[in-house]
Image 1 (spheres, helix red, strand yellow):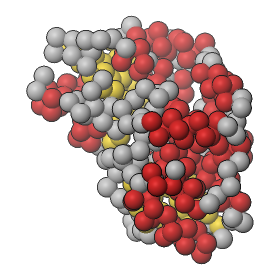
Image 2 (spheres, helix red, strand yellow; image 1 turned 135 degrees about the vertical axis):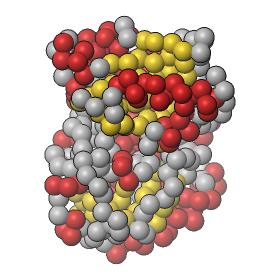
Image 3 (cartoon, helix red, strand yellow; image 1 turned 90 degrees about the vertical axis):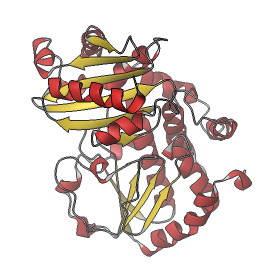
Image 4 (cartoon, one colour; image 1 turned 60 degrees about the vertical axis):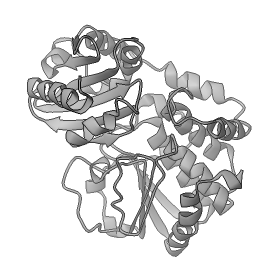
Length: 340
């Protein structure tokens, strides 16, 4: 399987390992509104680094870790702090995983440039331009950062354990949409098969994650689905949820997740581009987009114009503006980018 590893990973792997060997105390973090690829990648890396004898600190970053991921091995050890609540000088190395831009380290303040800690970035987002002070490993042909890590660990001869395997598997499983999204290859399935050989109860990992909804989650889903607007003869569909409506329906912002409705929107055949615009606070909008055909309708191009990033078929951004202005801008940019 080593011969199938990306040449970029083969090139960067020894350089990254050298920096790890130099460090004693290493910082890891989850990106804002973390998904399983973020959480799983961070936890798998934590276990791998600890096996090398390193002191590893994992902070949750801006957002709480969703309850749906708290059964991932090691999740309960994540520290409830963001980047601005730690002392950067306590660490020799900061390994940033699955964060396509500096804003995905933290959105709570202006991230210091140059970085106060030697930094390595490991990611798979095509929109990542490389912002590390030491090494940037961005392999956008891979469908998940967890798959990048699997190959890194293979080159490093990391001994696979059930804890590492479970976290890598969940990252790959979710970022490929259950092996449905573009970028998923036969090798992705081969890697997944290898990982579940260490985790015979892998189906329970998936089941606990996918069946952890609360009544508030369902209430938000109902609200979002009732707010759908379509444009350009149904080619673009947006679920637009205001902060006022969240308050009116007694739905805590923490339960207003785009992923709760994205699969349903994407399932409609004639809706080629779908999105959710959620006003999580007055004047603060979170945007998430999906595309059936990432080559023809690359939604990362849309989110980059809005200050975000992501993948061709799934991308997101945040905006500080009114909900109406955000919606108008999305519609106009979509028309311009995709000739709708």
